[in-house]
Image (cartoon, rainbow, N blue to C red; front, side, top):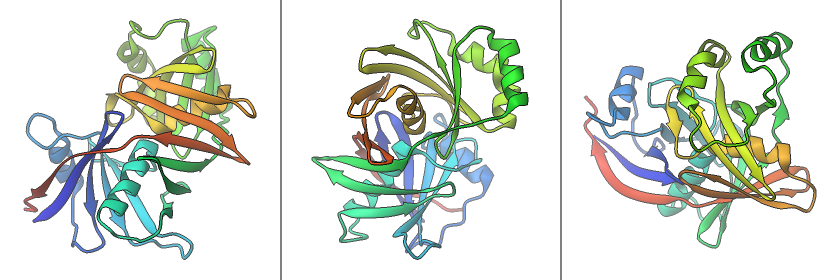
Length: 260
C-alpha cells in the first residue's frame, strides 16, 4: 500500500509520493495505468520525493509522465513537491534546495504561494532541427529554449482558437525524438498568454518550464511579467542571474495505492 497526495499547480496536476519512508516500486506500465483519467487516478506527472544524491541538496525529485516515461523536470511540479515537503513536515527549513535530473531548484515560501529560483533558460541550438522546423513553420517566429526541459516556443497573434493539437501532430516526429515540448504564446504589454502541448501528456492547463522559457524571451531587467494559461497565472522577474517564479499550489486529496 502506497500513500499519496493529489496536488495541482494552476491545473497542472500531480500524484506525489514520499519515497523517503516507503518502499516504492512502480513499473512504467503501472504508472501508465495510474495516470489514466478513466480507469486510474489521472495526472500529468507522478512525482517521487527521494533522498538526494548531492550533498548540497535536501531532496531528489523524480518526475514521470502519465504515459509512464520519465521527465527531467517540471516547475509546476517542483513547487507542489516543495509544498508537499513542508506539509508533511519532512524538513524544518523554509528554503530548500531540490535536486532534479537536469538542475537544482531553490524553493521558498512566499505568502501562501511557492517561489522557485531557477537558472535562466538557455537557447537550444540545433541547426538541423531548426532547418526542419523552418520547412514546416515557414515565417513563424519561434525560439528553442532549455529550462531543464526543452521547449519550442512560437509567437502568435492569437492563440485561443488555434489548433494546437494539429500543429503538434505535424511536428510530432521532431518533438518526440528530441524530447521537446510545444508552446504557443501571445504578448500584450507585460502579460503573456500561452498554451502548451507536453510530450507524453498532451495539452496541459499549465506548464511551469514553458512559462519560464517564454518569460526569458520577453523579460527585461527590472520588469515583472505575468504568464497566463488556462489553469491560472505565474509571475516572473529577474533576480541577479536567475529567474524567479511565483505561483500557487493546492492539495486536492490524499489516498492509498494498492501496490500489486
